[in-house]
Amino acid sequence: DPPAAIRSRASAGLDFEALSVEKSAGWGVAALGESGFARSASDLRVAGAEGPGAVYIDDVDQVRTLPTVQFAANAVNDVFVAAHLRTLRSDGTWRALGANARYRIRKSSRIMVEGPDAPRLVIAPGATLAFEEDAELDVGWSAPGALFADGGDDARRVVFTSAEGPEGPARWVGVLFGERTDTARSGTGGPSGATMRMRPIRARAACRSPPSGAEQPPAARTKRTASSSRP
Image (spheres, rainbow, N blue to C red):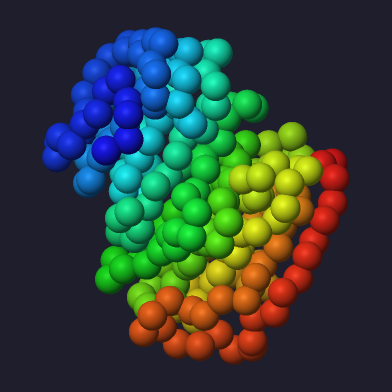
């Protein structure tokens, strides 16, 4: 288990109100296995954590349960998505974390948004998803799934980027849509059925086979590099 001041495997979710976790030698809070946060959990503050992030979450389906978090004087403000349980099975929203915080997706992980109930992942305006090397987000490959990411304007754009930062190498795979993407729930009726407004900061999609058992994409994936500065 990762070192953390609070580690939870509670199936009902970690429950608290106005909780402050301070001066942890590792993570502030770690939700392990299928654990997440209770619906009534509110007002989490993580301050002075010395580890590689402030919050650690194993199950991608539990990221949606994260309450509002205040970050203060941590070594790194990341919410680390370990994705040891990698399939998002339920509708959910990943909230914006603030200007100096982001979701960091673990190296070589493949987050899957799909299932019999066609789950939809909503990325809230202003949220940043930073992918480590060879990490990716796959939507609608083996089963229906949907993604909605619309920042609305330049000031609150959703950002998908490399975890290495603007000056580091771009080694993440990309956001990949399969033929079973639920386009009716992925956007607002544009030509592709999806609305995605984000800053392409040193994004690169590398060659990668689709998820095991899924259909091949209509065209071969090729390496491409897109580089631009922030607006």
